[in-house]
Length: 488
Image (cartoon, rainbow, N blue to C red):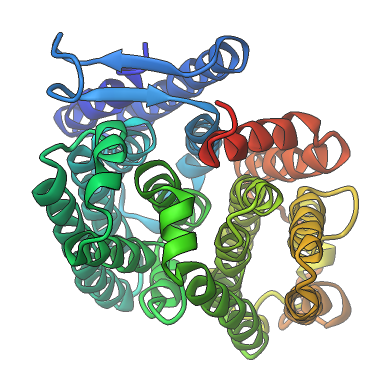
């Protein structure tokens, strides 16, 4: 069953091209995305009850063959990716019809399926080289999806992302090559077994450095974030929502997998000063991303800079290499994915109405699009970390983690960054509710029901995770324990 998560979207993508029409292509994407979500949920239950699952491809046992491995860590990511993809199928039809020419829409759904295939492949593979291959599949499809944006700058943004993404992929491949040179294996578990015998070599240290830099480029860790604001701003609304909620989260998952499963926490954070380096970069990302967001006039660009800051929270949690820190990081991967997906969907609904998304353009829409505006407000509160939302849970866990080690300065940085998020979310809310609209049309006109409903599903998921956080926190704790070697 695990292989279906990769095979179904991979086979469905060319079918979308063959049918050559928007409506059948959308139906295929919706069918496959919901099927993957159902499979992911069943596998999640199986892993939660019975422990990790290993699936061998082609009958060749690892380390010689390719292994798909599911555990508490990657099932969190798989559920997030498939869940967002399924909800995006509800949202995308009306959104894409308004933003992409109908004769090109089938190509959009084909590329989105390939992106889904790549992201799920990264999440479940136990083979380092296959992780690179799936990363490139997701990246190449992401470039084409971003380039489909209505403005000419979408093409430039996609090209900029392509250049940075290619550099990141090259660094990752070089790092994997160094590990293969020293261990003779590409299976992650096998590399982890063989690595201690050669861990004191410069080749392994260089491999670690290349992998960290390559994946940091992929999830836009400061100062390697330069591609992200334009990519999120000029991509079609459905693409911004999908990629912001999933792509960077999967890339940071890959980094966690390499650091804790392959290299081991004792080596990466004990023998090397990696934790301190990541901690500093995370704090700078949290503060600089939040400050930059305050000065944006475009709502999507504001949310993009916010993503730079939020990735800082995740990296801060993993940089502490503690059970509580990892639990916070994993919880925030899920929570931020849901929250940012909801915010970009709400922004896309506003764009559907106004055909523009600057803060001035959305003035007064709180009265004309009450459901969409309310969804933005609730998701914004979750991003800030208000109680009864998912954002509060992961930020609280992160504060617990830094206070355990008496890092009072880090606690202050978290609080300051959260206060800065009040300012930039507040700017949009103020425009929605407390400014007069640019025209005199006082009619209420919401976005299509499918777009509003999809947005509210994600908003509701964030509130549900805030009110009933036990399943997420318990799964994240299990995953953290497994990564630190105290359980699976």
